[in-house]
Image (cartoon, rainbow, N blue to C red):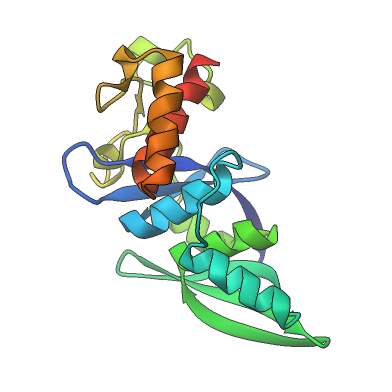
Length: 210
């Protein structure tokens, strides 16, 4: 079976289902997206790894694993999303130590959080992408927008199987009413309080203004 390399498009959160997040993966040489529903903690961990400007005062669980692996010369070479059963994705982490390769089973969200920290490539099989991959389409009001600049993809739309997924152009949590200075102050507070979910959302809003 042929492997397809993926890159992270972004993370979106549900406006109606508390704690529901979607990690959006994009095939490197194509337009299909692979949406994977993940938990809040894993979403925060991935967001922290993506946002280089957010530095947690203490290591998160995946950071601890990275520090542990570095200490014992363990390298994560790649992550493969290898199976899809009843809507659940299964992944393997390909590791190497002393030129000996090991394959470790992992939840996909954990595997990707680690791949980011090791700068390891992410793959899936073509058969999985053929089955679960989608094309994200603009709504009529957003048809002239550049997809790469859109700020989020609604989890609620992704979870509605068989319906067209549209780009959400709205913001949430009232951050649009804050100035850049106020957003940066709120970001500093969120990081200090280790509220990385809020920090990630604030960074999204700041990025849209720049």
